[in-house]
Length: 312
Ligand code: ADP
Ligand code: MG
Image (tube, rainbow, N blue to C red; front, side, top):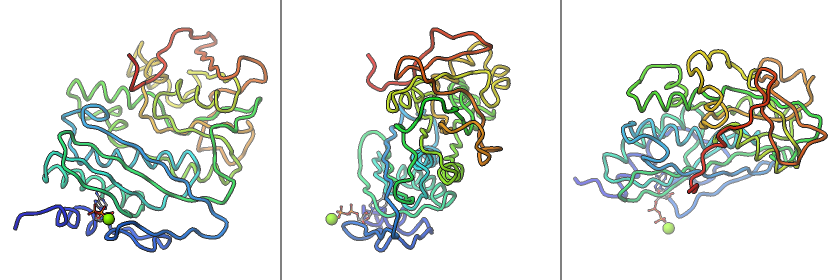
């Protein structure tokens, strides 16, 4: 029998991911899903879209693209410190086979990260793309926000930057087995670390998706502080320099797709030991919204500011 839209949804999504969450009272199958919120908690919701040829290379398997789309969406919940609960998927595919492939990766990611599929939409279209909406919750008033950096705090990084961008370049040159390609392909949303930070009292955080410099700029502007970053303090900086040579600074600052967490906290917060490293500070002086980058004691003046979809 020909697999129509409803069979396709059933085969690929409704009957696939096995994760359930008690807060989802009604999931796939009705016009909308229904959700309960435990007392004292707040919802945290985020959505992201990825398009073939823009967000992932044309020759990347759709399974991988689906997996990456879910993982990168969950990184936004990690940055807020939320407990991930469920996801909705809007899938646009050029054929049934493409839906199956994308769904396979999505299902794998949902199961890996323990996230329930609560609904979505599946439509036919000329370019394969996927939008993932994710929801989670956390105790009311405790979310880590971009606008809560205080002057005089230490800036911390959890995770690595620069390797995913190196991996994308290597992928485009045909490489499939390198640490960089692995970082680019296997996005790890730092959900556990995000929750730990929030529980430790951290109030300001951002995930690095568009490049360290651009995302640090978002923190600086939202919090109206000046920030100082030290490249040579980055986790695995020497390894990146070994692997990327002169392009290391550009990749670390402007590469993107790192899904590391940049956050502000006191320098001596014991809970941070082993999960993050200090890479800079917020200044009590300096121009609001600016980011100064240093390497080996010298200020770096000219750096790429990250990816802008609508840049001319
Ligand atoms: P409606 O016509 O009411 O918008 P649909 O026919 O689009 O509903 O979808 C039927 C059910 O299947 C809905 O509950 C919807 O949330 C779910 N669904 C459709 N596509 C997906 C998908 N890609 N992932 C998860 N659930 C989906
Ligand atoms: Mg309907």
